[in-house]
Amino acid sequence: MSNKVLTVGIIGFGKMGQIRMQCVDDHPELELKAICDQDTEKLSGYSDLFISENYEHLLAQDLDIVFVCCFNNVAPRIVVDALNSGKHVFCEKPPGTCVEDVEKVIAAEKANPNLKLKYGFNHRYHYSVMEAKQMIDSGEFGKILWMRGVYGKCGGIMFENSWRNQSHLAGGGILLDQGIHMLDLMRYFCGDFVSIKSTVKTSFWKIPHEDNAFAILETQTGQIALLHSSATHWKHHFALEICLEDGYINLEGILTSTRSYGEEKLVFAKKQFEDSASAFGKPQEQIIYFDKDDSWTLEVGDFVSAVFGDRTTSYSGSSVDAYAVMKAIEAIYGV
Image (tube, rainbow, N blue to C red; front, side, top):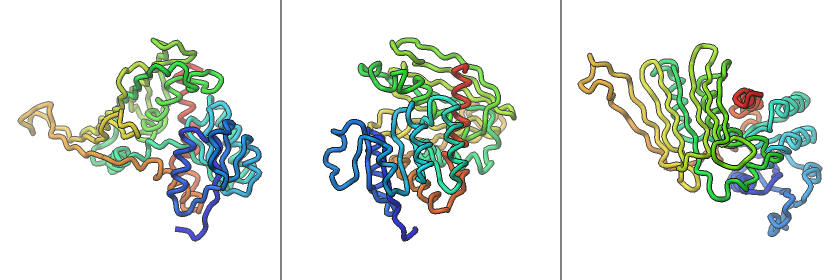
């Protein structure tokens, strides 16, 4: 731990901005100094902080770090301005609405090589995901053959009116909003995809973007990933099956504040053929349960370590990751 305390500003004080405020308050090396939101009612009660409706006024303050928790259509521009103002930046996903957004950010990042930029792919920091990553990287189960992932949400009576389904703010549908997490995990486990086939549909909701996305993705070495991102699942659902040469690792459920995606657990087993098992096709499974979600705290802690120089620019959630996942999303969209 460093003796220095880093000063922080938060731009965008909705749900995610408030989650990040808690992360900042909980970290001994961070101190919140400023918040910004166009809805001034959200800023009431914070008279001890610098508050503003204008993000440029916040960037003019003497701050070390800025958290960008804004709508998809404006986040890239704010990230660029924050980097150019000399601030380290943590930005929520998605990194923008298109690959061009990320390219502009990367140009600003290269122009400010001493600054750190991280994107909020917090699913990488769930304990089940970290455990699966260690198991895969150990080589104990051999290399990945294929993956099958489903990330579905119910929708709800307010779904159509959400800002996430307003074209000028979001720039995409359920894939860009939620499926991006599953896509990022698939790439995290097996690398970049070089071939993508997809079907994107608006099946039920009266929205300008997709409520279902189906994709078949393939890596250079022939690993296949099947992705279904859905807003018509009618039951919140998270599942990622990973089949490897010598067994399988399945992520089932993921912890959230509402617990609506079920119990978070990791199910794994070594393959067993009929010459080594009395119950052919039913290998002996092991299950690890996880009852705590520290993902928000852990990823901010990783970012702080990077700012203090303990990580290189290749740390998890970098602009490299953001660019790759947006390239895949554009391919799924058929752009």
